[in-house]
Length: 635
Image (spheres, rainbow, N blue to C red):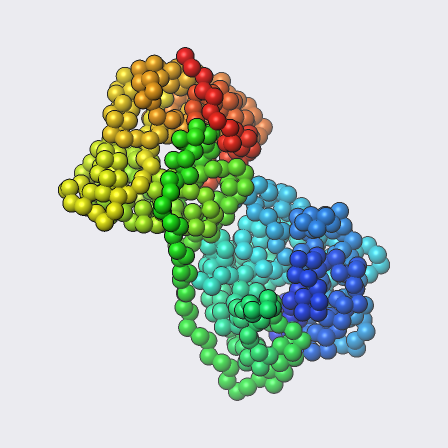
């Protein structure tokens, strides 16, 4: 069936899809951690029986048992070399069942998420993701064993629109005229895990080469109905699909997973899905042949009036409890023990969706980061509160945050209130800076004055709040326990002034210094040697800023337009001449780090344009150093 014929078929009447495969297999004795896709070869009769039950229940379309049969997910079971075999077997098992019935039934190739994150949130490139999708889809479309391939492809349960676009591109390369359905999965707050809303999903997918868009998995029928209603408003010309879970799963005391939605409940919602614009309806986790049979009856004998669409309501997530504050922070311990530190700067989201930030944080942790610096309104751009973002990172990822805390735009009342809130949420590592002027940002007319300079704020925190009193001298309920860092430029135009400022910040209580990005390691090394000579044992640990260049234009911009940054002619020429400037920037950053490493106690990586994957390539080099004590070169 080609795409035009499929679209025509959908205009005649809605098609009923099948229900879950994985949860039904689990209910029939398959362990949840087994490879369900391998059952096409190991236990084909079991898979065939489930297909048969769904067709008997009235399904017009059944999906192959191939949801996780891509090279990345199969690698977890040591089966990455069997992509073609397992997908072809999935088609063969389902085809044999379909041929035993005397009515037309379509076969859809099920393609699930890859199970990895795509750059910049992960380290898998778009090209590699597309290749993995194409490999699986080719085996579904053309099994090469004499069995007819699938009639359509369903890409489902995706949470990343970038991954969806890779899947669409792969499908169109493999089979340009095959019908393609793309379904996204949403969290309880009606957003994907990476923060996209259903209307954003619909608009973006409507611009790609797909035939049907929709929602699957997610919560129960009520949520999926709400989601497709929003998607229909955003993309009214595209047919929709709806395949909800049987409600939110509940875990019993005996370890069983129970889905509460009944078949009759699904039958009622089948009519509402169609009313909202769905032309493909079915079920996902927790559904079985009973749910599909109820939907079949409802579609064949529609009531006079369908269930009205429920109101669109977003349900916020509750935050968990903070960790106890009765011990020094991990950063304080690392500084005291002279361990080499690897930290990466992250920027809070521009809205309320945090999953993209948290996904990047998970990837950086896996790559070897010890801490994550959370910037506060960098370049005076409006973003989520940095201390809230830092708290979420610590809770969700398990890495301590270093909160950037600018003095600009805050009065003393606001500063102290924010600091106490930060401490209460166990965000106790601070990096005190002046902050970027508002005239360069989103709100150039916004207030830009301040009550206190960075060195004064360091004094306020270390000598007053950490002693149990506020700036006015009034007692607070208990002393805070902040670790405080200060800013340092190793390539300052006026080195004498920079050294005086550093001396003042240390005298006021700074525990460490975080430098601006280094592009001249020799000049930086010489300034550190001078600091050691003049400050002696009073010099605090220095954590060196390293910012990988992104491309030639980026290098020229930093060199010509950013105060305090000078990039050598050699490095700019290397960026200009490189065939892969992103990787050349990583190589240069590694070289700078290797030269400066003996003189510092850590590295502070600053990714460009959110490319955490490039920073991860540098972390690979320094991760072995984080467990070592610093052996600093002395003048």
